[in-house]
Image (cartoon, rainbow, N blue to C red; front, side, top):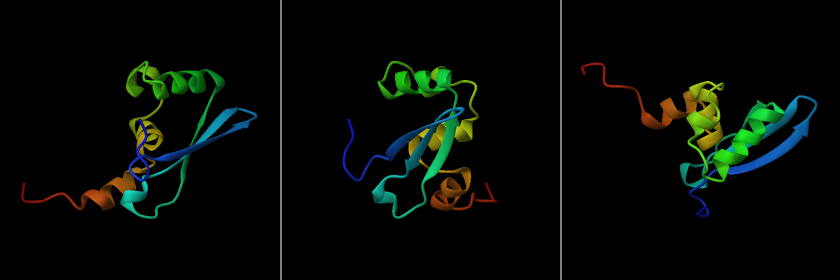
Length: 92
């Protein structure tokens, strides 16, 4: 279930290699740029299974990097996530 402002917004465009999925982080995080991941036709079919809740994303798309899967789930890049989480405590 998508809750307005708390879930990423997504749009998809077909291209010559398959599909490009564009994801913008949830509004509650603030204004952040849209990210994109290009998927083959086969990957896109598995992406749809994940979106329908049939599989965990790591099971549906094991051929994508963890960073690409995170972008599809949240719209956040590794850099965005690091900024939001803050720097790790170096004393730990």
